[in-house]
Structures are given as C-alpha cells and as structure tokens.
Length: 501
Image (cartoon, rainbow, N blue to C red; front, side, top):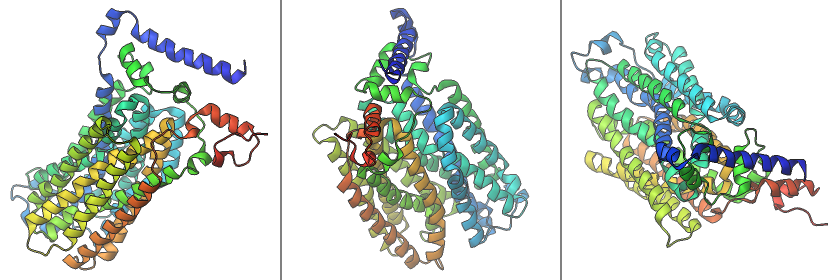
C-alpha cells in the first residue's frame, strides 16, 4: 500500500473513530443536543451580521453627524451636541466609505491563507474582536475633527470583513448536509441584509434620541463582543470534533459525501488546485454574477438612506425605517429561496440555479429601471419600488452562491473568498462611481445610476446562466487530481484527465 493511501486510511479511520467516540451508547446519544448544526448556523449568522453592521453604521450616522440635518435631532439630545462635528465633505465621505474596502483588499489573501493553516475558529474569533474594538473607538476618532483616525479604524473594520464570505463557505461545507446546502448558504449569505435591517432601524432611533449617534457605535460594539464570545464557545471546525454532536446528526451531515471529500475536508493544510479551479467556466460564471449582484447591493446599502432622504424627502428618523424595510424583505426572501430551492424537485439542480439567479439579477433590474423613471413627489411608490428591487436580490442565495458550494465542495471557502475580493472591489468602486456620477444629486443623476446598475446586473446574469453547473467539479476528488499530476501532462489542470500513454 502506498504511503498516501495508508495516510488516507488512517485519516478516514480517525473520522469514523471520532463519530463513534461522540456517539457512545444510545443513552449518551440521547443526552446530546439534536440539531447542533442549526445552533451553529444561527450563531455564525449573528456574528457575520455584527461584522457587517459595524461597517454599515457610518452609512446612516453620516446623516446624524452632518450639521445639515442637526435641526431634526431632539432638543434633549445632549450627547449629540457634546459630540458635535463639522460634518464631512463629499470627498471625505468617499474616502471613509472606500477605506473599508482598501483594508479588506490589502489583507484578503493573507486572511484566506491564514484560514487554511489556523482554521476558522481562531481566525473568525480574532476578526470579531478586531471589529468590536475598532467600532467602540469610532466616537473618539470622530471627536478629533479629522478623518485620519476614523479612516484607520475603517481600514481595520475592512480587515475583519475579509473573513465573512470564506466563513460562509467553510461553515456550509463542513456543517451542512448536501440536501440542506441551499438553506445554509442562503441563511449565512444573508448576513449583510440582517445587518442593514438592524443598523438602519436602530440608528434612526438612537440618532434622534437623548443618547445621540455615538450610542449607535457603542451598541454595535457591545453586541459584537457578546456574539463572538458565544460563538467561540459553540463552534468547532469539523462536526466530528464537537462534543455535542451525536452519531445520528454526524451521519446526516455526511450523508451523500464521497470519501475523498471527507478526507480532504479533514486535512488542516489542504492544497488548493488553483489552476484547475481557475480553468472551470462555472467558477467564472459565479464570479461574474457575484460582481453584478454586489455592485447593485453596495449601491443600495450605502446610498439608499441618502436617496430616501434627499429625493424621496423622508426625515432622518423615518429614513432609518424606510431604508431598513427593503433589506428586511430581502432577508426574508433569501431564507425562503434557500429553503424552497432544496425542496423543489420538478426542476434539475442546474435549472434551479439559473431560475433563482435570474430572479435575483433579472427581475430586480426590471424594478430598478421603473424606479429610475419615477418622477419626484411619489415617496411611497419610491419606497415600494426600492423594496421590490432590493428584495429580489435575496434569491441570489439559491443562485450563484449555492452554485459555488455545489461545484467547489471542500474548496468553497476559496471560491467564496474570491467573491469576498469582488465584494471589496464593489465597496471600493461604488462610492467613487456614485459620487462621480451623482453631480448635484438630482433625480436625473439617480436615474442614470439606477439604469447603469440594472444593465450590469442583466449582462452578468446572462453569462452565469450560460456556464452554470451543479455537479461537483472533477478537482474536488483529490485522488483524481494526484493522478492527473502524475501523468506528466503539462495541461492536466485544463483537461481534468490523466494523460493516457
């Protein structure tokens, strides 16, 4: 027996032994928590949302800090007056918005590599503590009446943000059964919607209360500390390592997985077949759909409060609720999409991916086009159209996001890590693009911005539908990859088959 085969047998035996050790007797099984994976799912979602919430806070509090809307604050708002600020110029806001993306882009490759070596539990917890501390320090940085300290903190928040999509992929790959893949990926990838709903709603109330806008940051920092403290106690990198997972649940999670996939997932320092992944058309379709989706979502999450306030004419307090409503509906649609995708059996898996992705990017683009031509003076209609356009993007969890986990399996953290890079690029480009096009902030400027993003969504969706796939890629089988590499064919990574001599 070859050395690698012996190692695989030993590793597979260790996996089975872990399952047996965890199960013990029937009475021991009954004493363990059934459905621990769902607790892991919810806990991870809350932590992901807290990271995103800490970033989104500025999207709304910029309205509270600005003296332009200071007259809307409560007369009892002594905290806000004590933390008075000259407000930020258009260029300052662009720098502050983009600094998060800069921090993320500078460290995303390093964080992804660290994840491979140290495991998710350590890296995600460290990221959580970083975002909590930096968020707590924001009011002190703003009080300096300059953007330097604030930008440094935003860069640190961006560093924490880099772990979000790899976490989504890693948790889904390790803890979701194949039949629940859609539910897990849709739920976890909805963290940005959950974050926006909570932050927009609470910020509107706190900004106009006696606590003032600094309370927004203190509240979010406190939630982050608590959420990550609970998560690090609950989470383990593999189900077989968890003391509360019984044999029944472990079998449910691993049902349908190949031995090669489980062996690869159990390796702490697994080698990633970079060239093979990059030569797969479906992967490029996933990334294309992702950038089309993320550019528009970044527009909505970052600038919808400004659009609702300046074009639709809502007050600061009502802007918070109006901006949260579309994202709340999107969050609910995302959970529904993931669940219904797993339960829908009249269509093939690939057909479902195309259908749900087209709803996400196609129908949402349709509503954006209608919103673009909505005349001023129809605030309720504007909020309804914005809600419809935003909510349709919730179906992306059963579109390109689910496609990524189905095709890449144990390497989904790597594939989704590149979606994280695209998200960082969208965070960087969106403020620059919008502020360059918005001019005086007239309704005609917003019309062009909405039409541009709608067109981009449609184009990227067409490409995704053309190359989408649902079967596991050949390079998820480690033994097949090794056979191809031993064949001596320089282009094994492109062909996916050993050279026959």
